[in-house]
Image (cartoon, rainbow, N blue to C red):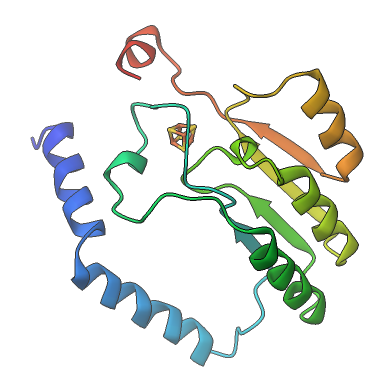
Length: 158
Ligand code: SF4
């Protein structure tokens, strides 16, 4: 049986290949062509920077540049969401959203632009009393806390 490490290496080399990019772009075009041009949910990756090293996360293998989404770009996305009557937004992706100093104002902006259901995923490492109360006031609908491991052995690897 193929070891987990080999499977992981194969998966990473596929995801980082140009063939995968072409395949994924075709998949997106197919969805657009099918008439499903307005998404149900918009997923935002406010940053792909993270302060954790979860054993199961491929984030460090990704070759995209690291950064934080600018407020201007988010404002543009929020306006487009309003025009398309998007009702749900997720803040997640390959990074820790609370590293983005503007995350609370991005959530408020999403609310102001008609997004009714907003979910934030976090590893909670930066979640103190101040940010927690700012989040409560921001209009976020749910905060989902992700754990970096579920066993002592996996935690030691992280
Ligand atoms: S907190 Fe999330 S993005 Fe960061 S390393 Fe863990 S799984 Fe990856």
